[in-house]
Image (cartoon, rainbow, N blue to C red; front, side, top):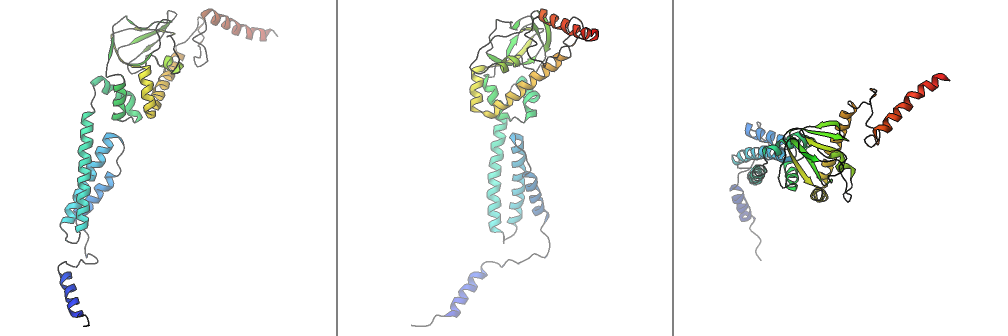
Amino acid sequence: MEPPDFNAVNLTLETAAAAHPVCPEWRDGPEDSVFHLGHMLLVLGFMGGSGFYGLLYTFTLLTLGFFCATVWSWADACTTDGFLWSFALLAVCAAQLVHVSYRLRSVTFDKEFQELYNRMFKKLGVSLSHFGEIVACCDGDLQTLEKDYCFAMEGKTPIEKLSVLLSGRIAVTVNGEFLHYIHPFQFLDSPEWDSLRPSEEGLFQVTLLADSRCRYVAWRRKKLYLLFAKHRYIAKVFALVVRNDITEKLFSLNDKAFDGRGHRYDLRLPSYCHVQKTDLDKSDALLLQVPGQGGGK
């Protein structure tokens, strides 16, 4: 058996190694500006937020960042793997950018729904996709109520929907006495909605009369509860906006509620709206007698 020819083996290795240039261990100078620009864009891109506009911001900067990395690695023969990875990531981010742009363009609403989103839901961080589910629940329909027409009548109209006023003004009365106005982007029936469970039924305890031509959007109770069961996030958003609307109405009423003697009622106390006027007068008389009796003693 002949011994192996080590010279021939070394010659083969030297020939194979000569086909690929040897990369230096450390560069003498810094990288060019394209390298630094690409990494700056990547850092800014990863700082993007959520939602459609956040995704649009993120993938735009990531696409530009990986494009700069691809250009930089293309000019260096020692960064073949880096070029392939940068190019692959560039393609993925560009595809995501096109996809997000298409979805953003496809999610469009009428002017009144867009204004509803900007005034009530955008500040809560609700995405356009979730708002699209909300609009789809009402079939994208807007209702019109002419002046001097009733939206609801006290003790007669059933509570079967949740509505938001988009334009116009509606007067709220109880027992023929004026309570307050409902202005655009306020709920028409938030107290009634919050007072009932999904399985319960009830009637309006107030009368809602259009003070001018009104436009509003309404969601049927059953369809809205089905949407809540499917999207718990939307259920939490509606619970927040409905109860905030009730709170604002109570505090606005608290500054306007006076009895015949000029005493202010605190509407945060329970069962105020269910007390008869005669009972209120009797309670005032008792309150006025207490200081006098204390003074007599």
